[in-house]
Image 1 (cartoon, rainbow, N blue to C red):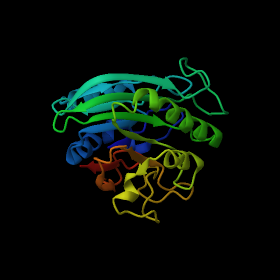
Image 2: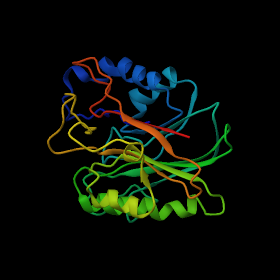
Image 3: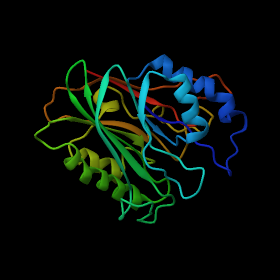
Image 4: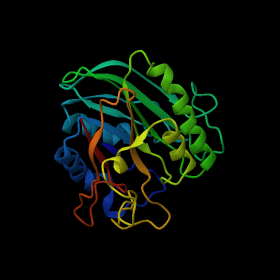
Length: 261
């Protein structure tokens, strides 16, 4: 699952959909779809992480590096089911020309970051590299350069001799016609939503601003991407999760899920 859960921002007016009103629905949505791996965007230490620690006790996690220019900061946090995976390594970096420091580049509106974990699947013994991120919502250049930076880091995290499958999750703030999307596909990534038989159309949007309706400026901006050099892993299904109890929604984004074999 990839899930932008909507952080709390002082300038926001979420109305009835403030976290305390939708937290139970948010958690229920995660539990109903029962993912083994989750890439969160806009997760904050309070209240999100505290609530998830209590409500999702079967998961371990890597918080990642803070992003956004000012507090309250968000984190590109990765959760994995403890009984299914062994953690082998983890790390993170900022999406900038100085990726080891809290910094911004490429006219980005917000400081952004990416987190990664290397896991061993106990069922299959398959090695997985999971990368989770949230690209900028304003600067196209920042989205493209951020995507390129992630792609440049992957070879050192997933060397050919270990042959791991690489899964990239995130809110990319751009649609599948974008240069950032194209950069991933040109680096042999597969869009699991399309590869499992779905199509991009008027119903494939993932951002809805707590309305459930298609946003006129955006389409499918949340993706789960896969690259497996051994071709032993593939997505057999993928979906945009539209769980809701209007006027309450789990988030202003629909989460997305993919099932792999």
